[in-house]
Amino acid sequence: MPLSPIRPTEEAPVSPPRALRLPLDPVLTLAIIGLGICSAVTLGAATRNLVPGRPNYYVERQATYLIVGFVLMLGLSRLDYARLRSAKNAIYAALILSILAVLALGHAARGSTRAINFPFFSFQASELGKVLLIVALAAFVAERTRALRERDTTVRVMIAALIPAMFVIVQPDLGSGMVYMVVAYVLLFVAGASWRHLAGLAALVAVSVAFVLVAAPAAGVHVLKPYQTARLTAFLHPSSNPQKEGYQQQESKIAIGAGQKTGRGANSSQIPNGFVPESHTDFIFAAVGEQYGFVGAGLVLLLYGLLISRALRVLVMSKDLFGSLIAAGVAAMLMFQVFVNVGMTIGIMPITGVTLPLMSYGGSSVITTLLAVGLLQSIYVQARASAALKDRVLRY
Image (tube, rainbow, N blue to C red; front, top):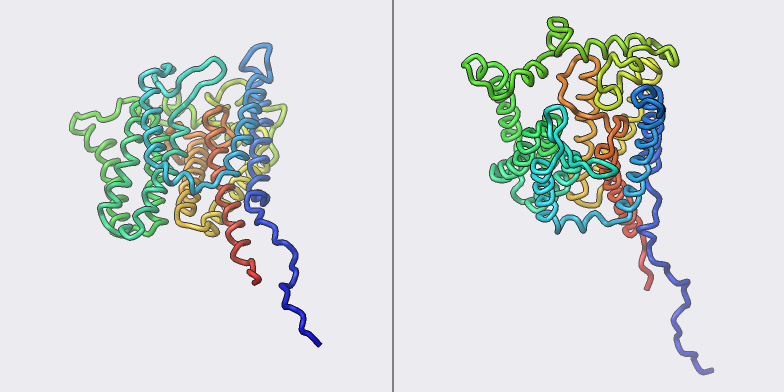
């Protein structure tokens, strides 16, 4: 009986990996949606008297910023973040040029030049610069994996962050400048820089602060303007000058304390009557405390806890060092801003103009935060895709 020729066994066609169609991180997405809702609800009550005849003015604009930012987040989540690594020089150049453009063309308001005004919005380069700096520094550090413990790497990273930070502080925007330096420090820590270098940087910061705030003024040299020094040190003794530098924090603590367990709701008086300046931007947490009390403040902090914990999870599951460093930078940015902003509303941190991410009113801040979350989502999607490919079994 003749033997039949050997024929290849028929196998079901293998579909290509659905790398870019994997779902977003659900907890991370729910956290930002929850914070967006909390922001709109809080602003609705806190700003109803700020624009006569238009009680929903700030709510409508904040909702627009949130929607635009969410769409940009979705678009960025579908981009392979690894492509940004080769563009680090262009990204860093865009960071510097945008900050210089604000200094040259920006609109001065209350003694600061922080934004360029356009017909429908104002562009604050120092906010967008946070994300640009994270990507640029992460790419630079990732390319020096064999020299991470060298002093040259530490010096270059800190100088690269110090240059835009100094331009931003000149505006003056001390809060954003501090964020830049914290991001650079955390990236070095996560990458594995020498402990001696990290300790040296911490000591240098402590000595610099002591010199600027204590030693230099005692010698008759004022690095900062007197009002800036008073503002930075007012939280240490707010009752000594309650009508000037200590006024905001005193009224903020009164508002938060008045909220007690569940808030005063429609009976709120401190925020709607304007006793707390900037209650829709830097001091929005005071509005949360008065209107919704401990329960509302706890909910907002819980949402931030979820957001930051997911950022740290993305850091761990990233498929490469570049992604881990981006996630570390975003987590550092969020943690620092939340800690400083909430701290200054309850009187344990100086007033530095740091916004509360996704809660404070402002297009630049909201969109920048959602772009940072979009990077986290991109890292998450790519990590899931990489894990799926590793689990595939090739059949011959």
